[in-house]
Length: 373
Image (cartoon, rainbow, N blue to C red; front, side, top):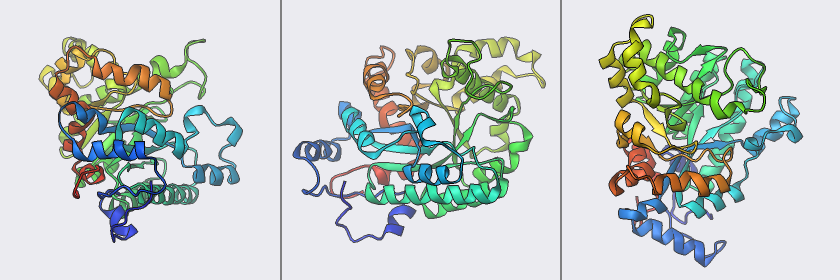
């Protein structure tokens, strides 16, 4: 999309969350796409909210970072997994196809650095790529700051850069680092920095600790099928067990893939919580289940248990692009929401868009609106 004709500086675009209202230039875009953008600008209620979705689960591997990382010997391009092969054209095509107005970009592969200096250099490449992308498409993308917790000072520097200069809307972090899960006291310094900013923390699973990376725990079953969900569930239960959100009350946590197995074991946690150390209080468990947010990437199964456990106002639209292909997103992810018998039209509108705006108000500046933001 061409840059806005409004007289705004690149810095003001970025500091305002990478999002200002723009008019669609006639050149460089098809009439069909311009018409679709007009729909987004002019109708933000009812079923049309499905054409203004906010995707909070979008993996971004900057092509410029891949070039840099290959020179550094961190990756081999021909061996990159499919989910690390991000490109702008297919991304915009998918977004337009399913009505995603704004994608929140989560930089991937940020756990490969060998030193603090290399981590800072690599993150600089990532941030420059994000800044360029947001400046070029200010109404389509927002960003997350990737935490590199192996290097705490770099993480603090990146947090300041991402939020204060680039207008990040949240922070991304793995469910565990070297087998130590979120909620452990070793995370407290990092979480205290986020709490001071009332930040939104997006978790993401990987392989379960203890096994060789990328090798299926059960032969023939890819780890993302089951193990990823358990990784998220472990992190969530540990956050509850250690009362992390009580220590950091301004922090919001988003659990991917509808919370893993967490909604399904809610009653089990209440029944057997006394066996944890310290024991889980049933009331505390119920409270935390309603304090977490959950995205629909996965795709989401019928939402009855999740809605009953957490409430429809805690569910956020997410695709898992490009880990989930366009066919998966259009065949499973979107229909799972649109045909879910539990969700009312108002709740569906919340899942698609309104819940994310309430959680991350700066995203409003990234939404195309007629007549300005």
